[in-house]
Length: 231
View 1 (tube, rainbow, N blue to C red):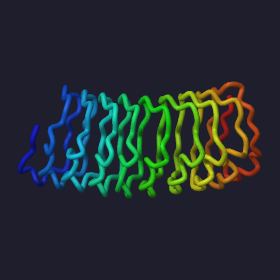
View 2: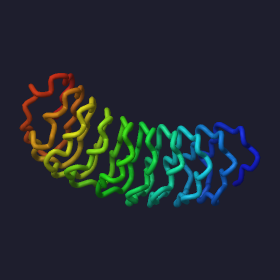
View 3: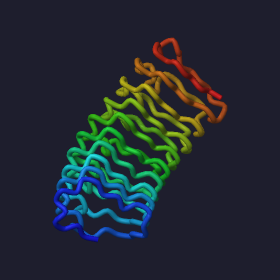
View 4: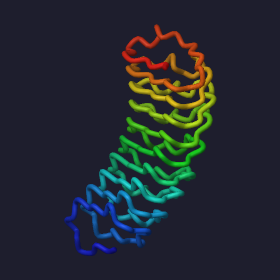
């Protein structure tokens, strides 16, 4: 597929096809492109030249494809990108600088993949990110500093993983968080060492369906909390 001379194209929808790859520089003339949706294809690889010229894209979705690896710098020219949807793929690896230069990104959806760990370097440039979803992956532990760069984050959802342990101060820098869900994991204990005492704005905390979870947090410190689920 090529789109030469479509210099005024703003919306491109290539969903529900049988596309397995994207040729290098296919979109190089689409400098006015604002929204690009490529849902339910079978794309496996995103090249580092795929989006080299589509500098004005705000919304990008590759939901329901077969992507396994997010290469470093693949989105680096998308300075104005607001939301990125990579849900329902087979992603098991994200290189450290994959989200480089995405300083305006507000929503990152990575649910229904095969991620077994979180690398804090993924989020180094995501100063404005306010929503992160990592549901239905293979995470077993949340390590210290994982979210330290995400100081603007409002919504964090890590449901239906295999998390057994949360290291000290994982959530310390998430003072702006209003919604946190860790439901359907394998947690047996959760205490104030996790950094939850810093949740000054948290409204919703969902810890349902864990393994006889021992909850050792003084909820009086969560002064704005409206909903607490511990079923």
